[in-house]
Length: 373
Length: 127
Image (cartoon, rainbow over all chains, first blue to last red; front, side):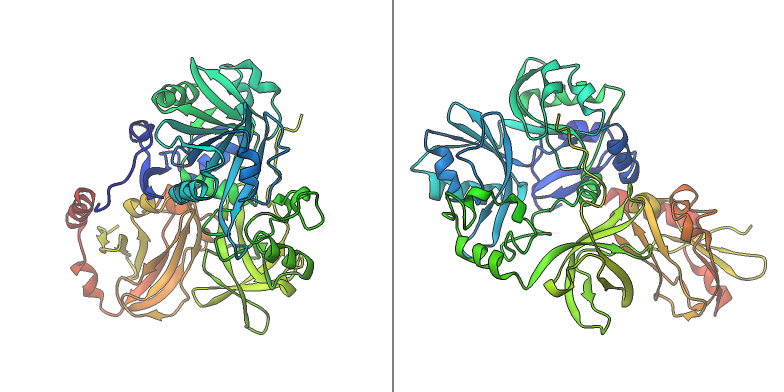
């Protein structure tokens, strides 16, 4: 291997567990454990799965102007984000494209806690420093903290054995919690469509916490392979595949993530990069958009496959695709010309030169089961 | 049952009593692929050596299964259409892909034998 891959604090544990490791966003990461992707996926939906997502970037913003400052980079209500809540956001570019998507939590005490994608974290940090550097303190926690995700219907009963207070949290709530005498941040959220938690833990304590959680009978270690099929069934976007700098939030079907107060008719309308483009697209519509796609036969349809109409004209392409173990069938997302985006529209993907029938479908493909109290 | 032969693409071949040759993928290959979710089987027709006769889709990716020798495909394992996991569970048995009549029956014996294939796997593991 020519490049030097970074390692998370759980790297040794992954090897010990027999993981198959792959390079991902510059890190040597577990794609699967001996259980295999299919069973790992199903186990997460039935019990609880533990994911190492320490490669993701954790960043702390501190200062009385931090929320106002961050609003200049994201089309999301940060100023009125309650203490103890987390919200989904994206960094937009002047052309309306998406630089990265992220989670923002309000810790109180004029502190915001951000989680950004691994592949984008250095670029995000530079972006924050360039635009917010004079208005708040920006502290990357890349080396200091690890990030674990405990996902699945049994996650709550597992984690409450360590900290009873987590059971009362609802979806997207966020709080400081002591776990095994470590100062952790816990959010009730995830990337699987299931109930569960994401746990920011000091790097030095990450392995002990992971071992403790894995010792619980409901918990299985889960790799990136199942993480991808879980999020795809849940209809969740993967940055760099389902959206990037060439797609706007409107094209990516992420209008729901643009807070009402930041929209064209909102009290704090605009003020984020590319607002004019986004608002114009919202009013006038877009030429193409992201939709769910269900292959009508057993053939998985993968990223990059061309999508054609009945006449064979190329009208889009697949951005994510594979097999959904819970769905028991292949599934995909793609960008299509907007006139083909209505539910149940019949289309075709070209796979190895053959047509595979597709139907435009609602997302999520598998119902989300978040705990809303 | 005659002894197995192998290709560098991790396929196995077995000459049957009727002279046809059964093809599947090895235990090493199925393990590397991960859970198989779909197999596109070949048509009953002639394929040239090296042609992509079949495709195996795992949870991770699509991989070609190449015609090990020039010949005519005469049967496919239709069980794989409903039960692609047989490729993982029993790669050398119930998980077979297809049978073909080789254009040159003697060419089978010239492929890798078990020892040579085992050395190939070991070389891969050491690389």
